[in-house]
Length: 203
Image (cartoon, rainbow, N blue to C red; front, side):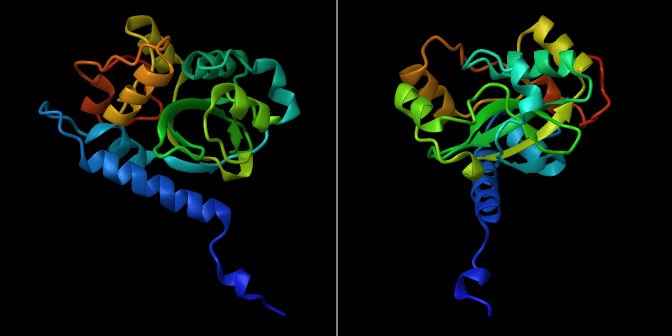
């Protein structure tokens, strides 16, 4: 017998809708006067990216976990060490009021390989960081994959991330994570060229 709850959206569907709405708002607020192919990283991700539901890190990748707050470096190192992983950059939502720029890996099964934020003992992490994290099943990711070669070249040239951070995220970083350099860039070369998942050189 069907229950009334059977017709309600599943958590992953609700999270997808919430994250998409946040990214659409971020895209619509893009006010950089320089002509780009995309209206910010959110536009690129919405056009070419994929939604990923959160999951506990598979045991096979535990050895690739890196330092907290170093997601871009961690994801790039993990994808370099394990060629079966893809470097993915985009946006992450875990219960905060807005999505944060983030990087993770995508495994051969198409699932998230989170090599920065602990996916077990989340309550301890929340207590230590004072960040409002939902259970892992409630986390939402939306990103695009880049080749390791392109991410490495970009990192060597000017550092990651390749996508822009929002004003809200920069303000949050200044207030809660001053050790992270969230200074906004002057330009975003990745947004100036059409997205190519096979690209290996700088724009």
